[in-house]
Image (cartoon, rainbow, N blue to C red; front, side):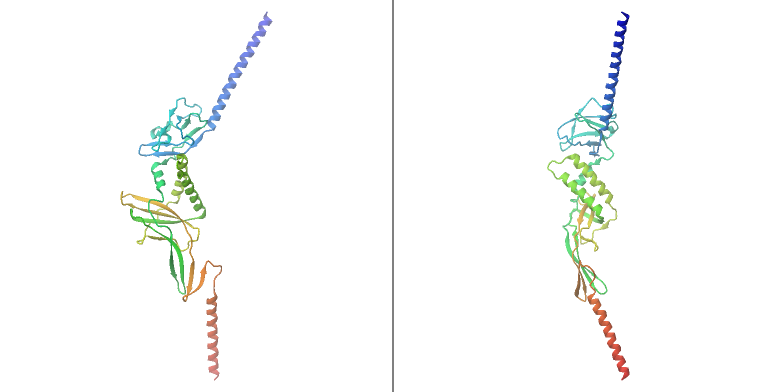
Length: 326
Protein backbone atom coordinates (compact mmCIF):
# COMPACT_ATOMS: atom_id res chain seq x y z
CA UNK A 1 0.00 0.00 0.00
CA UNK A 2 2.78 2.40 0.86
CA UNK A 3 4.67 1.44 -2.31
CA UNK A 4 1.59 2.21 -4.42
CA UNK A 5 1.09 5.60 -2.74
CA UNK A 6 4.75 6.39 -3.24
CA UNK A 7 4.42 5.69 -6.94
CA UNK A 8 1.38 7.91 -7.18
CA UNK A 9 3.22 10.67 -5.28
CA UNK A 10 6.12 10.47 -7.67
CA UNK A 11 3.81 10.68 -10.70
CA UNK A 12 2.07 13.71 -9.24
CA UNK A 13 5.43 15.36 -8.52
CA UNK A 14 6.62 14.75 -12.08
CA UNK A 15 3.38 16.17 -13.46
CA UNK A 16 3.75 19.31 -11.36
CA UNK A 17 7.35 19.70 -12.49
CA UNK A 18 6.34 19.38 -16.13
CA UNK A 19 3.57 21.93 -15.58
CA UNK A 20 6.01 24.42 -14.05
CA UNK A 21 8.50 23.87 -16.90
CA UNK A 22 5.70 24.42 -19.42
CA UNK A 23 4.73 27.68 -17.72
CA UNK A 24 8.33 28.92 -17.83
CA UNK A 25 8.59 27.91 -21.50
CA UNK A 26 5.42 29.87 -22.31
CA UNK A 27 6.79 32.86 -20.39
CA UNK A 28 10.04 32.84 -22.35
CA UNK A 29 8.18 32.50 -25.65
CA UNK A 30 6.04 35.52 -24.80
CA UNK A 31 9.12 37.45 -23.67
CA UNK A 32 10.96 36.66 -26.89
CA UNK A 33 7.91 37.62 -28.93
CA UNK A 34 7.84 40.98 -27.18
CA UNK A 35 11.52 41.49 -27.91
CA UNK A 36 11.14 40.59 -31.56
CA UNK A 37 8.13 42.92 -31.74
CA UNK A 38 10.25 45.76 -30.40
CA UNK A 39 13.00 44.92 -32.88
CA UNK A 40 10.62 45.56 -35.79
CA UNK A 41 10.08 49.17 -34.73
CA UNK A 42 11.01 51.72 -37.39
CA UNK A 43 11.53 55.47 -37.34
CA UNK A 44 8.68 57.43 -38.88
CA UNK A 45 9.82 60.78 -40.34
CA UNK A 46 6.89 61.78 -42.56
CA UNK A 47 5.69 64.42 -40.10
CA UNK A 48 4.50 67.99 -40.64
CA UNK A 49 4.34 70.70 -37.99
CA UNK A 50 1.33 73.01 -38.12
CA UNK A 51 2.59 76.10 -36.31
CA UNK A 52 -0.77 77.84 -36.55
CA UNK A 53 -2.51 75.20 -34.42
CA UNK A 54 0.64 73.91 -32.70
CA UNK A 55 -0.01 70.35 -33.91
CA UNK A 56 2.13 67.62 -35.43
CA UNK A 57 0.51 65.82 -38.37
CA UNK A 58 1.75 62.26 -38.92
CA UNK A 59 1.43 60.63 -42.35
CA UNK A 60 1.80 56.86 -42.71
CA UNK A 61 2.55 54.88 -45.86
CA UNK A 62 0.04 52.33 -47.11
CA UNK A 63 -3.03 53.61 -45.27
CA UNK A 64 -5.27 55.28 -47.82
CA UNK A 65 -8.26 53.85 -45.93
CA UNK A 66 -9.22 54.77 -42.38
CA UNK A 67 -7.32 53.01 -39.59
CA UNK A 68 -7.16 52.82 -35.81
CA UNK A 69 -4.11 53.88 -33.84
CA UNK A 70 -2.74 54.13 -30.32
CA UNK A 71 0.34 55.58 -28.62
CA UNK A 72 2.69 54.17 -26.02
CA UNK A 73 6.02 54.91 -24.43
CA UNK A 74 7.10 51.34 -23.62
CA UNK A 75 7.65 48.83 -26.41
CA UNK A 76 7.17 45.93 -24.01
CA UNK A 77 3.71 47.13 -22.98
CA UNK A 78 1.61 47.72 -26.10
CA UNK A 79 -1.55 49.79 -25.61
CA UNK A 80 -4.96 48.17 -25.55
CA UNK A 81 -7.17 51.15 -26.41
CA UNK A 82 -7.18 52.38 -30.04
CA UNK A 83 -8.67 55.49 -31.63
CA UNK A 84 -10.01 56.36 -35.06
CA UNK A 85 -7.53 58.22 -37.30
CA UNK A 86 -7.89 61.92 -38.10
CA UNK A 87 -8.17 63.82 -41.41
CA UNK A 88 -5.99 66.63 -42.74
CA UNK A 89 -7.40 69.58 -44.71
CA UNK A 90 -7.17 67.56 -47.94
CA UNK A 91 -8.98 64.53 -46.52
CA UNK A 92 -5.91 62.33 -46.06
CA UNK A 93 -5.91 59.84 -43.18
CA UNK A 94 -3.46 61.11 -40.57
CA UNK A 95 -2.70 61.14 -36.87
CA UNK A 96 -2.72 64.58 -35.23
CA UNK A 97 -0.72 65.08 -32.04
CA UNK A 98 -0.80 68.37 -30.09
CA UNK A 99 2.70 69.68 -29.44
CA UNK A 100 2.09 69.46 -25.68
CA UNK A 101 1.40 65.70 -25.94
CA UNK A 102 4.50 64.52 -27.81
CA UNK A 103 6.20 63.31 -24.62
CA UNK A 104 3.52 60.65 -24.19
CA UNK A 105 3.20 59.83 -27.90
CA UNK A 106 6.62 58.35 -28.66
CA UNK A 107 5.58 55.05 -30.25
CA UNK A 108 2.74 54.81 -32.74
CA UNK A 109 0.77 51.55 -33.02
CA UNK A 110 -1.60 50.90 -35.90
CA UNK A 111 -4.18 48.20 -35.38
CA UNK A 112 -3.37 45.15 -37.49
CA UNK A 113 0.18 46.33 -38.28
CA UNK A 114 2.99 44.12 -36.97
CA UNK A 115 5.37 47.08 -36.75
CA UNK A 116 5.57 49.80 -34.17
CA UNK A 117 6.68 53.26 -35.33
CA UNK A 118 8.91 55.60 -33.38
CA UNK A 119 7.80 59.08 -34.38
CA UNK A 120 10.60 61.59 -35.04
CA UNK A 121 9.09 64.95 -34.11
CA UNK A 122 12.48 66.69 -34.06
CA UNK A 123 12.83 66.65 -37.87
CA UNK A 124 9.21 67.52 -38.69
CA UNK A 125 8.83 69.71 -41.78
CA UNK A 126 7.13 73.01 -41.06
CA UNK A 127 3.95 73.48 -43.08
CA UNK A 128 5.06 76.96 -44.19
CA UNK A 129 8.22 75.37 -45.63
CA UNK A 130 6.15 72.72 -47.41
CA UNK A 131 3.93 75.42 -48.94
CA UNK A 132 7.05 77.37 -49.97
CA UNK A 133 8.58 74.33 -51.69
CA UNK A 134 5.31 73.71 -53.53
CA UNK A 135 5.70 77.16 -55.14
CA UNK A 136 9.48 77.20 -55.48
CA UNK A 137 10.82 78.35 -58.90
CA UNK A 138 7.46 80.06 -59.60
CA UNK A 139 7.65 82.95 -57.11
CA UNK A 140 9.76 85.43 -59.13
CA UNK A 141 9.51 85.12 -62.91
CA UNK A 142 12.42 85.24 -65.36
CA UNK A 143 12.74 84.74 -69.11
CA UNK A 144 14.03 81.60 -70.76
CA UNK A 145 17.83 81.66 -71.30
CA UNK A 146 18.83 83.70 -74.37
CA UNK A 147 22.08 84.27 -76.29
CA UNK A 148 24.03 87.50 -76.64
CA UNK A 149 27.47 88.45 -77.97
CA UNK A 150 30.02 90.11 -75.73
CA UNK A 151 33.23 91.76 -77.00
CA UNK A 152 36.40 91.54 -74.91
CA UNK A 153 39.00 94.02 -76.20
CA UNK A 154 42.69 93.53 -75.50
CA UNK A 155 45.79 95.32 -76.83
CA UNK A 156 46.14 93.44 -80.13
CA UNK A 157 42.89 91.55 -80.44
CA UNK A 158 39.16 91.57 -79.79
CA UNK A 159 37.40 88.43 -78.59
CA UNK A 160 33.72 87.99 -79.33
CA UNK A 161 32.07 85.52 -76.93
CA UNK A 162 28.52 84.19 -77.23
CA UNK A 163 27.07 83.84 -73.72
CA UNK A 164 23.66 83.16 -72.23
CA UNK A 165 21.61 85.40 -70.02
CA UNK A 166 18.20 85.58 -68.36
CA UNK A 167 16.00 88.61 -67.88
CA UNK A 168 14.07 89.19 -64.67
CA UNK A 169 10.58 89.81 -66.04
CA UNK A 170 8.78 89.82 -62.68
CA UNK A 171 6.51 92.81 -61.92
CA UNK A 172 5.17 91.63 -58.54
CA UNK A 173 8.33 92.43 -56.56
CA UNK A 174 10.54 95.46 -56.00
CA UNK A 175 14.09 96.01 -54.69
CA UNK A 176 15.17 92.75 -56.27
CA UNK A 177 18.53 91.12 -55.58
CA UNK A 178 20.26 88.00 -56.81
CA UNK A 179 23.09 85.52 -56.16
CA UNK A 180 24.55 83.32 -58.89
CA UNK A 181 26.27 80.23 -57.45
CA UNK A 182 28.18 77.72 -59.56
CA UNK A 183 27.91 74.11 -58.37
CA UNK A 184 30.60 71.47 -58.60
CA UNK A 185 29.72 68.36 -60.59
CA UNK A 186 28.79 66.17 -57.61
CA UNK A 187 26.65 68.82 -55.93
CA UNK A 188 24.92 69.64 -59.21
CA UNK A 189 24.10 65.97 -59.78
CA UNK A 190 22.76 65.55 -56.24
CA UNK A 191 20.61 68.69 -56.49
CA UNK A 192 19.16 67.75 -59.88
CA UNK A 193 18.39 64.24 -58.58
CA UNK A 194 16.63 65.70 -55.53
CA UNK A 195 14.59 68.04 -57.72
CA UNK A 196 13.67 65.22 -60.11
CA UNK A 197 12.62 62.99 -57.20
CA UNK A 198 10.47 65.74 -55.70
CA UNK A 199 8.85 66.39 -59.07
CA UNK A 200 8.10 62.68 -59.47
CA UNK A 201 6.45 62.57 -56.04
CA UNK A 202 4.32 65.70 -56.55
CA UNK A 203 3.30 65.17 -60.19
CA UNK A 204 0.87 62.20 -59.88
CA UNK A 205 -2.85 62.98 -59.74
CA UNK A 206 -3.04 61.46 -56.23
CA UNK A 207 0.42 61.89 -54.69
CA UNK A 208 1.33 59.94 -51.56
CA UNK A 209 1.70 62.62 -48.84
CA UNK A 210 4.21 60.56 -46.83
CA UNK A 211 6.49 60.17 -49.87
CA UNK A 212 6.13 63.86 -50.76
CA UNK A 213 7.14 64.96 -47.24
CA UNK A 214 10.24 62.73 -47.21
CA UNK A 215 11.29 64.03 -50.64
CA UNK A 216 10.69 67.62 -49.56
CA UNK A 217 12.83 67.14 -46.46
CA UNK A 218 15.69 65.80 -48.57
CA UNK A 219 15.46 68.71 -51.02
CA UNK A 220 15.12 71.26 -48.20
CA UNK A 221 18.34 70.00 -46.60
CA UNK A 222 20.21 70.62 -49.89
CA UNK A 223 18.51 73.99 -50.32
CA UNK A 224 19.72 75.15 -46.91
CA UNK A 225 23.26 73.88 -47.49
CA UNK A 226 23.52 75.92 -50.72
CA UNK A 227 21.86 79.08 -49.46
CA UNK A 228 24.00 82.24 -49.34
CA UNK A 229 23.74 85.83 -48.12
CA UNK A 230 25.98 87.61 -50.65
CA UNK A 231 23.14 89.46 -52.35
CA UNK A 232 23.74 91.83 -55.27
CA UNK A 233 21.20 94.26 -56.71
CA UNK A 234 19.60 93.15 -59.98
CA UNK A 235 20.94 95.47 -62.77
CA UNK A 236 18.66 98.23 -64.02
CA UNK A 237 18.24 96.43 -67.37
CA UNK A 238 17.15 93.29 -65.43
CA UNK A 239 19.75 91.21 -67.31
CA UNK A 240 21.75 88.55 -65.45
CA UNK A 241 24.58 87.07 -67.53
CA UNK A 242 26.45 83.83 -67.09
CA UNK A 243 30.17 84.27 -66.22
CA UNK A 244 32.57 84.42 -69.17
CA UNK A 245 34.45 81.32 -68.02
CA UNK A 246 31.29 79.17 -68.07
CA UNK A 247 31.53 75.88 -69.93
CA UNK A 248 28.79 73.77 -71.50
CA UNK A 249 27.14 71.64 -68.81
CA UNK A 250 27.99 73.94 -65.91
CA UNK A 251 25.12 74.19 -63.41
CA UNK A 252 24.29 77.38 -61.52
CA UNK A 253 21.77 78.16 -58.81
CA UNK A 254 20.21 81.58 -59.35
CA UNK A 255 18.79 82.94 -56.10
CA UNK A 256 16.36 85.83 -56.36
CA UNK A 257 14.61 87.85 -53.69
CA UNK A 258 12.40 90.92 -53.68
CA UNK A 259 9.75 92.73 -51.70
CA UNK A 260 6.22 91.60 -52.58
CA UNK A 261 4.10 94.45 -53.95
CA UNK A 262 0.94 92.96 -52.40
CA UNK A 263 2.18 91.99 -48.91
CA UNK A 264 5.39 93.96 -48.42
CA UNK A 265 7.15 90.77 -47.32
CA UNK A 266 10.54 89.77 -48.76
CA UNK A 267 10.11 86.63 -50.85
CA UNK A 268 12.88 84.36 -52.08
CA UNK A 269 13.02 82.13 -55.14
CA UNK A 270 15.46 79.66 -56.64
CA UNK A 271 16.23 78.75 -60.26
CA UNK A 272 18.52 76.00 -61.53
CA UNK A 273 20.31 76.86 -64.77
CA UNK A 274 22.30 74.45 -66.95
CA UNK A 275 24.51 76.44 -69.31
CA UNK A 276 25.42 75.94 -72.97
CA UNK A 277 28.61 77.65 -74.09
CA UNK A 278 28.42 79.53 -77.41
CA UNK A 279 31.12 80.05 -80.06
CA UNK A 280 34.13 82.25 -79.40
CA UNK A 281 35.92 84.23 -82.12
CA UNK A 282 39.31 85.96 -81.80
CA UNK A 283 39.76 88.89 -84.21
CA UNK A 284 43.15 90.49 -85.03
CA UNK A 285 43.37 93.44 -87.47
CA UNK A 286 39.73 92.83 -88.41
CA UNK A 287 40.55 89.29 -89.65
CA UNK A 288 39.26 86.18 -87.91
CA UNK A 289 42.30 84.07 -87.15
CA UNK A 290 40.82 81.56 -84.75
CA UNK A 291 37.46 80.05 -83.85
CA UNK A 292 36.98 78.06 -80.68
CA UNK A 293 36.74 75.32 -79.69
CA UNK A 294 40.02 74.34 -81.40
CA UNK A 295 42.97 72.35 -80.12
CA UNK A 296 46.27 74.21 -79.95
CA UNK A 297 46.89 77.87 -80.76
CA UNK A 298 47.08 79.45 -84.20
CA UNK A 299 50.34 81.37 -84.43
CA UNK A 300 50.43 81.61 -88.26
CA UNK A 301 49.94 85.36 -88.61
CA UNK A 302 52.07 86.13 -85.58
CA UNK A 303 54.89 83.96 -87.04
CA UNK A 304 54.69 85.65 -90.44
CA UNK A 305 54.79 89.04 -88.80
CA UNK A 306 57.96 88.16 -86.88
CA UNK A 307 59.60 86.78 -90.04
CA UNK A 308 58.70 89.95 -91.97
CA UNK A 309 60.19 92.14 -89.23
CA UNK A 310 63.43 90.12 -89.31
CA UNK A 311 63.64 90.34 -93.12
CA UNK A 312 63.01 94.08 -93.08
CA UNK A 313 65.80 94.48 -90.52
CA UNK A 314 68.23 92.41 -92.61
CA UNK A 315 67.47 94.40 -95.78
CA UNK A 316 67.86 97.70 -93.92
CA UNK A 317 71.27 96.72 -92.53
CA UNK A 318 72.45 95.45 -95.93
CA UNK A 319 71.48 98.71 -97.67
CA UNK A 320 73.18 100.70 -94.94
CA UNK A 321 76.44 98.74 -95.30
CA UNK A 322 76.40 99.15 -99.08
CA UNK A 323 76.03 102.91 -98.73
CA UNK A 324 79.06 103.01 -96.44
CA UNK A 325 81.16 101.14 -98.99
CA UNK A 326 80.20 103.62 -101.71
